Length: 294
Image (tube, rainbow, N blue to C red; front, side, top):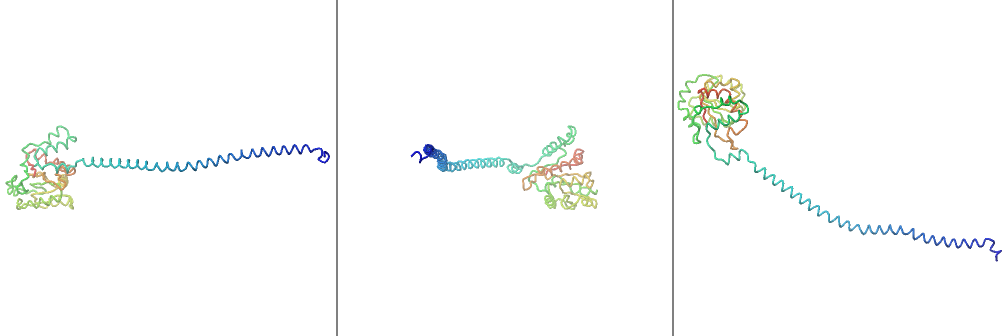
C-alpha cells in the first residue's frame, strides 16, 4: 500500500487539508468581499429613500420664497405710493396762484421784486437808487377797468400829448406785457383810446430787432406795445429812445393759462427788470416817466 501511494502520499494528504483550509478561507473572504457591495447598495437605497424627503423639502421652500417676494413687492409698491403722495404734496406756482384770490398790484409789489432781484448784484447805495418815490407811480388798476378806460383815467390829456410828440424812434406811451399773443390782444383793446395815434407792436416773434428799429425810424410812433425782452434789446441798441417817454404801463394783473402773472415767469421777470434798469428807472427818479400797473 505504501509503495503504491509512493513516498510522498502524506504530502498530498496535507495539501488536501491545506486546500480545504484555503477553500474555507476563500469562502470566508467572499462574504467579506460581498460586504462592501452590500453596504454600497444599502447606501444607494438610503439615498433613494432620502431623495423624496429632500424633494419634499425643496417643494416646501418655493412657497416661502414666494411669500417673501410677495412681501417685497408689497413693500416696493407701498414705497412707490408714498413717493407719489410726497410728489403730489409739492405745490407749483400754478397751484398757489389758483388757490389764492387775485389781488390788484400796487407800487410796493414792483419795489419788492426789484430789490429782491438786484440784492446780490448791487451795493447798498445802488439798491437805494433803484427805489422809487410814490410820486413816480400812477393810479393802479383795481381789476374793474378795461385797458382803454384805465388809460383814459391816467392820461386825461392824451390828445394834447399825442399832438406834441414829433420825435422819431421813440414813443410817448409804452405798454409792456408777457407774450406776443397778449400784445395783439392789448392793441385791439386800444381802439377806443388811441384816436389818431400810431401804435406799433414790439415783440420778438417773426420780427428782427433791426426791422423794428427801421420802422421806428420811418415815422412818428405814439404808442408801443411789446414784450420786455424785445423792448430791452431795442433800448440797448438805441433803436428805441426813452427820452420822450411819459407813461409806462405794465400788464401786471393779467394771468396766463397757468395762472402766472408777468413777474411769475422767470425769463420774463429778468427781461422786465433789465429793461427798467436801462434808463427807465432813472427817468422815473427824475420825474419824467410815470409807471402804472394795469
